Image 1 (spheres, one colour):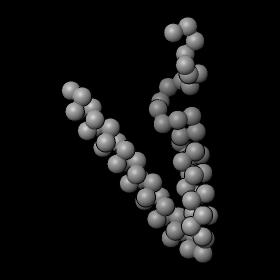
Image 2 (cartoon, helix red, strand yellow):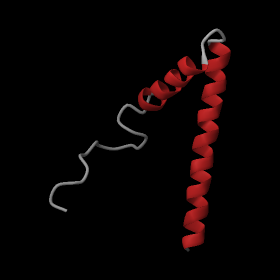
Image 3 (cartoon, helix red, strand yellow):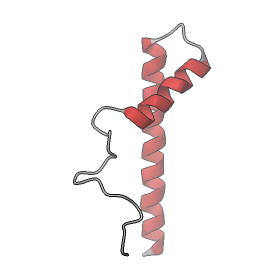
Length: 70
């Protein structure tokens, strides 16, 4: 069970890295004159502000964490 959980986590992290690399490449094509530092700033903004994920990547109501009374 633990090995399967570790494999799933590894897969999720690999998928995240692939998505980030794809966005970085997209930004390099869209803004070819920008420096590496400028592209990295854009990647950082995309990670924190991408459309559709303003409140995180999950559906449902936003709650504070840790949840009170638990």
